[in-house]
Image (tube, rainbow over all chains, first blue to last red; front, side):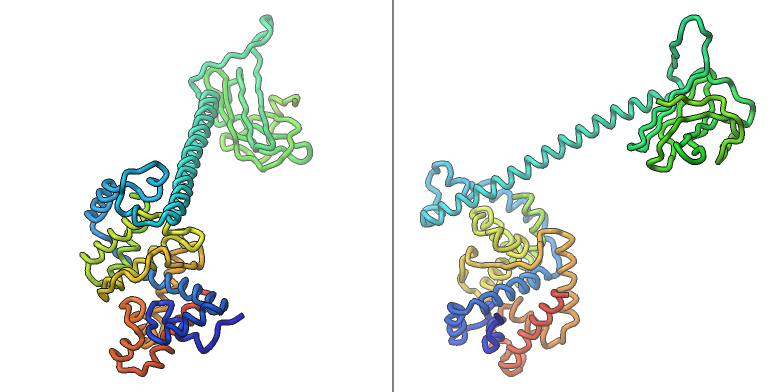
Length: 258
Length: 156
């Protein structure tokens, strides 16, 4: 239903409170019976609210804030006060009891909404604290693994002499690889070890270049890898310091998998 | 209350200043509006519109009452603001208001003046006609045309 054309001009004026006299009375009488014009009036008011909001921005003096907050502090809040039996407050005595009851309900709803928001905030803070705690723990583990100063011990049968050892922990879904090695032989000059991910099908994929420390220990943590590759095993070759795209020598170590 | 004040004081003050044109009067009105909200938060019904739109409308209303030395004509609780979009969101609000400002700026001068005299100065169409020397019918048509233009701009 469209609003009545003959009232369209007057509706615009009425929405602003600029219509007076007989025209105003006539329009008000019409509005009583016409839903389409009432809807149009609401729409006009919504448009006009935007016009009001578009007023050029200006900020009150900071003193105005202090003035308001001290006035607020002197006066108990409406609505909420009606929940508790209150001493006489002049403004309240003027409010008819029904309105006061409605006020109390809505004020309570507002108050509860406020409490909800506070609750959500506390929850969000707690979640963030928890996440931080987990992150700290993970970072701690990673730092220990990667720490060149950390002492590394490899336990093996007491009779055998220390053998080079490597352990790769690969979480395909998480796109994460941690490789730790010990007892690696020292490298010739300008050479480095390169770790390879040997996929179930296809060519070996470079998974990090590293040099062992004086004790033969080394770690590779989360090297860049293509995602979702299924690993058959891992291998290590000796490569030029800058690394190779494909192995150029026989592996010195190959994993057994699992 | 401090939070609400920090969010919306500049909005209320801007509207008050636009209508009243005087800082001291605008600040007094700002105080009144927020005290009213504090005393009777129920006057604002969130189902009927967004708080910023409602604040802008009651501020404009009160400012015009005070400008015309009228007794406050209506209780704020009676003022209904149907609102367009979710104006409480900062980004959406500034986008919509940017559009409103542009539309007002692009409008023929006569339309814009008529709208502003009625809306921000609280003049009746008879007064606007007397002031501008234009026929009464022209003023009415211009105000309506201004609002139609605005509606069309907002719909895009």
